[in-house]
Length: 445
Ligand code: AMP
Image 1 (tube, rainbow, N blue to C red):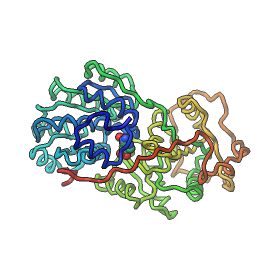
Image 2 (cartoon, rainbow, N blue to C red; image 1 turned 45 degrees about the horizontal axis):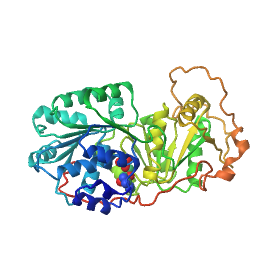
Image 3 (tube, protein in one colour; image 1 turned 90 degrees about the vertical axis):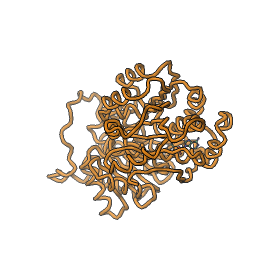
Image 4 (cartoon, rainbow, N blue to C red; image 1 turned 120 degrees about the horizontal axis):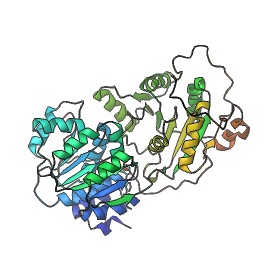
């Protein structure tokens, strides 16, 4: 299948080929014709599947006809980064269309946003809180809205945005096309979807399955040896850009500092950074100034770095969904990537839950030459785990120290070489979209 079969407006078709997109991804194949028909859509897809273009292309197509300078399409997203990323897609895919997109989110001066909205826009990509501010102040006119997209609805729910979303829904025209995208479908999102979508078509790709191109490995290690092991792994692994996840902001900050001390170009991304510093870290990661970014789940929401070669879970996530979400950041749009997870004995239950979800057992690896026997310092406050919620008693013991080593997987499967496991399916033609600006009004301007 090719993009030409959608019969998109010639201007949009041209920008697709300029962006280097050749073949529509599965979600695009399913969603684009359905959205073009004007139907409501419930999209089950995670980041990395091409879902942004799946809604952006038919929206741009629709907006090519009709009044300009009126807000006709609104996308609501959970984070500033995701909002920027969606906006960039509208800019790239709408190149030459003279349609105008702006972002609206908090943490930055409101006045440029007010001015941009006043000047007339066709598309707004917004985070819920700031959008509500604009609605409250009467600085955004939603009366002409034709299409509403709720992107990463499950994340918005996790972040407590559901009441804000409901307030927004009460302020926009009831007669509209609504598209709701979510990686998972928790009951509250399902309820919301049933309330707001009219006779929706469901499009679904890789609901919880991670991208096929990602190869996973577990590295059993004691808590106090995580940083030395990480340094050893980085030393022996051919990485381009690495996204490392920690469980807390504090751990992200500390680990970022330790990596810097060890000579890596690393930055950490924590929820309480100022918008400027956050943007600087993200931009630095994108342009290669930082090779490593350390982040928590919340802080990492919406990061789109198509070149991420490795995702490393310094701390195992709390749910299998979060695991899939995290590793979805590598292997994006069918590029290959690796995902390493450091696991302690206490993570055994979560490992089993993740393996159950993935329907496969994850390979355990050890690093040859690494001294796993170094005892814990007497006082390991810095990285010691605070007590967790009580968990059910483990039935199966976690792999003991040395047990995994008996496989000596490092020899055969050194992360710097090709690890064993499912074959990677590289896909050509996923080249990065050229950066373009068309009447774009970006944050801070
Ligand atoms: P998304 O899931 O929307 O975050 O997209 C993930 C990445 O895939 C982005 O970098 C897009 O530019 C890229 N992408 C989306 N659709 C295609 C396509 N049909 N062909 C190649 N790359 C694509």
